[in-house]
Image (cartoon, rainbow, N blue to C red):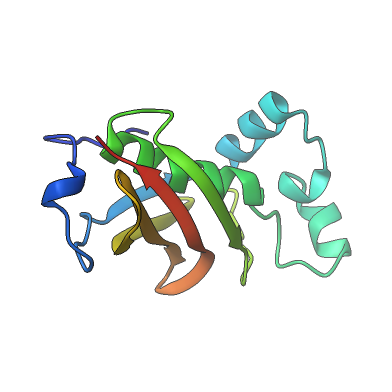
Length: 146
């Protein structure tokens, strides 16, 4: 899962309101299992139907940090520098249930420049949506550009 960036953004050329191209990510159950192994998050609510529904969930749900990682990876690709994201915080207003099929779910990442801060930093509004509903809100993302 990568985001293609044509050119690296420049602080002096950006204005508040600039919208990054949205990006869709496909998430399948196998992605939850792989992420869980890499993150050492073995909680069965992320891969086992019986456990997840036993806790009142609609089924296994994506890890919040996996969803956040996709969104931040999108911004890192846009900025062209893994160290460019210097501050972030967010909240998870909804769950991301992931069915056990080949289709999985499609998450859409959207971002726009909210304001220019002290050069070379910008505050970016970032959201991840599932079927149009926000599942991750990151109103506090600071990106240092060149």
